[in-house]
Length: 309
Image 1 (cartoon, rainbow, N blue to C red):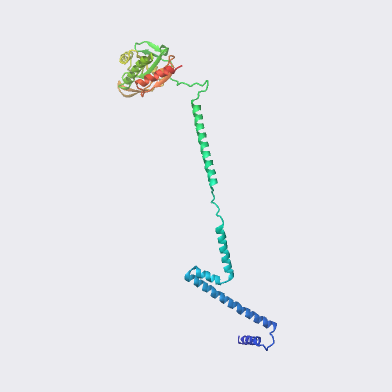
Image 2: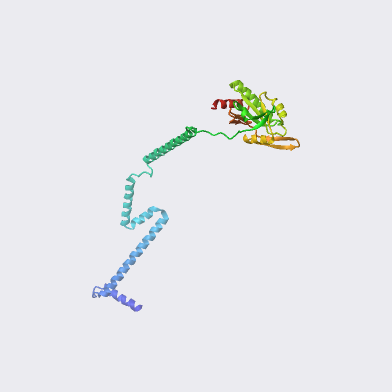
């Protein structure tokens, strides 16, 4: 190490002395390299000192000292800031483009949506009208079937005379099924029937034949039925028969009946509470339930007869 240092000092002394001959190319290259390295080190230390000064200035007080330090670093940075400022000014002068939806596109959207809504509403109304027309229209030759209610029967009237359905042809007939021991419903329905046929005769000049058919053949004999029907109307006809005959006629007219609360000979009969309107051919036309009062029953029968072909 000491020998190498002495050699370097000698070389430097010769290089600095004007009287000494010039260095050999190799020595000159070595000195040049040493001088370049020295300059590079100095420049490196200066740049490092500049960076530390700029960092300290930025930490102490904000952007302005840092900007000044950056400006002191070189003209290139200043030129860059100048160009950036000019670019920002140019951008500020340019017109700003509109948003993704313009007024024209919004107007087109509103018009299109309104047209779709109007079209849908019109088609919906047209479809509803078509359904109504299809429902109400009656095609030529089209007929509506009637319920399979009614049929032949053979019973005894309250005078003990044998009768069939043919004995009632030629007149409008109103039938009711019940029993003479009925506590309340049957009397109420028969009174309503009697009052209704009187109203029909008075209002429309129509004669209706009222008929009572028992569903209790075990107790409702001919005599029992005769005494019972006289209490309601002089034109009321009472019919009875054997158990099989009553079962047959009840089945033909779709009438339900069954004994309930049987205690020896004292019992009630649960049954359908319906009146059947039959035309002069003894064909079923319409039935009337318990919800009809006297006026509505009379009005309903009159309308059916007038509308009957």
